[in-house]
Amino acid sequence: MKLCGFDVGIEHRFFLIAGPCVVESEQLQMDTAGTLKEITSALGIPFIFKSSYDKANRSSGSSF
Image (tube, rainbow, N blue to C red):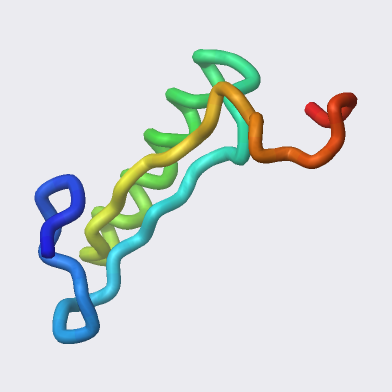
């Protein structure tokens, strides 16, 4: 199976999906993505950046 161009599955190597839980600002997204990309590139780890702008899956109407 492929995910964002990466082969994924038990027989394939580890890859990382990471990012802030919720989008707070464009600058924070860019800084976080850049830092994570630098780290994963240095370690040879495939990386997919993921963050949400809408946390509709939260159970409380007053949550962030």
